Amino acid sequence: MSRPLSSTVSLPPSKGSQRLWLREALSRCRSALVGVALISALINVLFLSGPLFMLEVYDRVLPSRSVPTLVSLLVILVGLYACQGLLDLLRNRILARVGAYVDSMASEACFAMTAAGPLKSRTSAEGLQPLRDMDQIRAFLGGPGPSALFDLPWIPLYMLICFVFHFWIGMAALTGALVLLCLTLATDLSSRRTSLTATVLSMQKSSMAEATSRNAEAVRVLGMVPHLSARWSGLNGAFVDTQLSLSDVASGFGAMSKAFRMFLQSAILALSAFLFIKGEVSSGMIVASGILVSRALAPVEVSIAHWRTFIAASQSWRRLSKTFGGQAPAERLALPAPVARLDVDSLAVAAPGSSSLILQKAGFSLQAGSALAVVGPSAAGKSTLARVLVGAWPATRGSIRLDGTLLDHFDPQMLSRHIGYLPQDLELLSGSVAENIGRFDGAATSEAIIAAARTAGVHEMILRLPDGYDTQIGEGGNVLSTGQRQRIGLARALYGDPFLVVLDEPNSNLDQAGEAALTSAIRHVRARGGIAIVIAHRASALDACDQVMLVSEGQTQMLERKRDLIRPVPASPHPAAAAADSAERHDETGDAGTRDAGAIAIGSTGDRRLVMGERA
Image 1: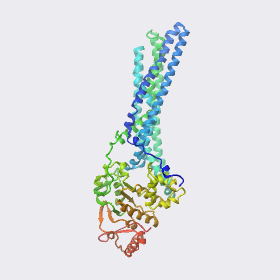
Image 2 (image 1 turned 180 degrees about the vertical axis):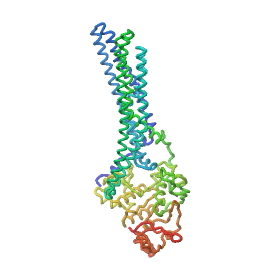
Image 3 (image 1 turned 135 degrees about the horizontal axis):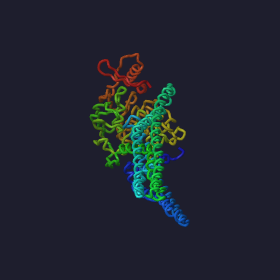
Image 4 (image 1 turned 30 degrees about the vertical axis):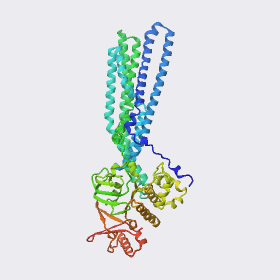
């Protein structure tokens, strides 16, 4: 190997950030937000320097023709504007860093939700939504939208000064503010539903793109590209139309707001000039009132211009708040590691997002040192049982206990140390072989990784790879063959000597050497006092198992002896039946090598026969 294994596993867990949820992360920024509010107060007070400068110039400098007074006022104004600019820069930087801080504190929890999301929903795009939501919130906090929101409370101050100038100037400014407020509400009402539709379409686009990318080989070979392209075009067209609708709404109301604001400024100037002619205001108030009204309405116009980002950020906030429940989960007591038994009682399971039960009243008990082979026809619920046993899917009813403790009572991270899982649809993550076997644990040692590989019988195969354990296998493990990926996945399941090892069709892509290694690994789990559960479709998986359970139509049945499973099947022209018959005959004669390559045939009363698997 080109470098130590410990150097390849470089993702140390951050325990502090694992428990930080959205509200807690944002509450830690409270002092920064208070500072932004104070800075906004200073900025808005300093903005009065412009109108006051105009009042002094028109009401004092011009009548007195005093150049020194004009220069002094100009110097003071430059200093005040410089302070205002620096404060504005400081406010924007603080808000940007608040967004980055919230992201850094909550992003790990959001990333964890990408693993839990697909277990609670139907699509992987929904699982990725927390990360997109966090990006949306960070982008909003770093944009001009929050600054405008902090300026909104100061609108009454400018209105009050307008009323001080003259009652009708104040009324004109107040009327203009109310009109812009109505435009803002109209923007919200017109875009909220469309924005939700755009979010749903975006998720559907992402889901379709990810599914097509994962199955690129089959898509191209089977000629599905034109058909999927047409479907994608329709979906993308609907998304673009929705985005155009949102853009039209935002730009339409934005243009109306801008035009009305320009008209209002001119109207204020005209009204002030009329009042000046009547002798009710000074000449300086003509210019000052126009500047004040412009400043008072600027935050409203900015809010309308960035209303889409505000709506998107608020929707993201609500989704994340709902997802996280607004608080960190309570710390759980560290429970002892299971060492004795697994009990499943009256278990009923439905797929996430569905109410239709796949398993009903499943129950069995296993002692330490046992290995259970789970057999049955396709779609009987075997993989569902595997998922719920390891905690990937929740149980609808019933209980799963390790040494008498409910599975739900274990801390999820602690429970993962006691469980090994090889899913039916195995995908390795982008990284080295060592990182994948060590589950990307920063504390993984070379000894533990190699021990897992040796137990899985894959150590020699790994050493033959270009860089051994440091070989970068790429996303999905596409550098390796299907059988190699499955064997490395077995090593990952065995890493750390977990008490419960669940293997879902672990030999579906293995050759004879791989099946021998699998049998040895199951025996090793039993010998060290663990429990192995193997979802089997091929007879070779039964060699190391001492118990067999049949799953059929959502029901489970423990079989007394393995020979109860394999019974003679009448000759049949169907290739699978012939293969099963051959496997049974060799089993009766003791030809283990041929039996391993055979299929499992389940006999029952009458003429009913279920034949599973196929000759290797």
